[in-house]
Length: 105
Image (cartoon, rainbow, N blue to C red; front, side, top):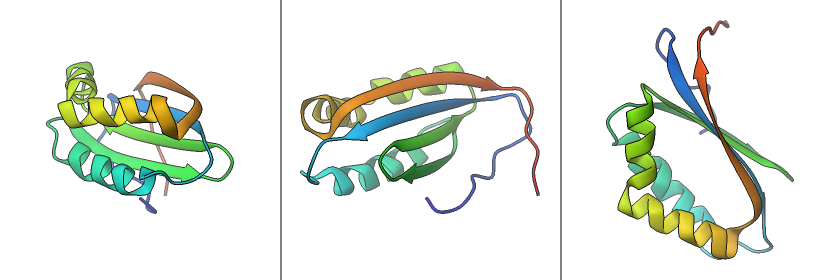
């Protein structure tokens, strides 16, 4: 996740997950890697970018709202969400945005 996602021409959607972690790993790193691999297999997945210091920000990109809905409902992802609420995050926020324009070099 150290590269900028190669997204298609807009429009597409971004799920922005901002979080503050609890102390210790508690299996987080392994699950995070598994979720990235699993997300990449989902229909409509376009890419992911992530950074963490004191505040973590992960942005995943999706073709449409149905793809996001299906990813949220994925059984393995639901289990990770449950564990996140129970032991990995002291706080988090999810934002879903439509990307209408992008540019860069």
